[in-house]
Length: 154
Image (cartoon, rainbow, N blue to C red; front, side, top):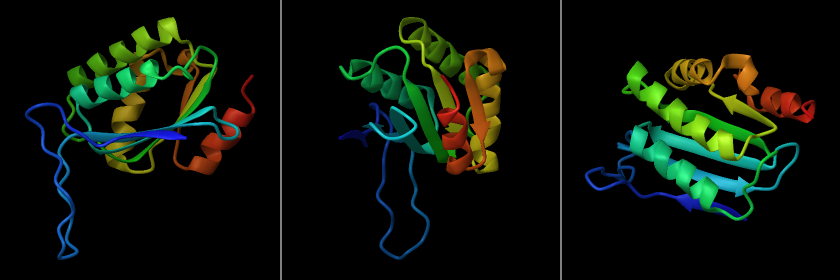
């Protein structure tokens, strides 16, 4: 079972892909949250244009789910996420909201998959704001590597 959010905050627009086969224009972060799996307990897939409001929506949706609790292994797939418009201050604010969530729901481990330059730079900065390796988060180029690392966490 998964939760899929494809809406934008007021003032944001989510446009469908054009019929001509050109590039889709997506404004705002979209996400899907799925509980269950192995080795992860939760998989979060995020795509589109990263923004603070989108991250806040994603955190709110995750923490509102009664299945979300401390000690879960989380796989975050954000290879389709464009963080190029986020400033360092934006990433720091996003990291602060994640730190607050982690205070109430400390994860066992979080593996972040960011296979593109647009997604990995922001993820690397966010992990450093959260305390680097002390935050029990790691950044990976592939989902297989991320899953193997999560499998070894206890």
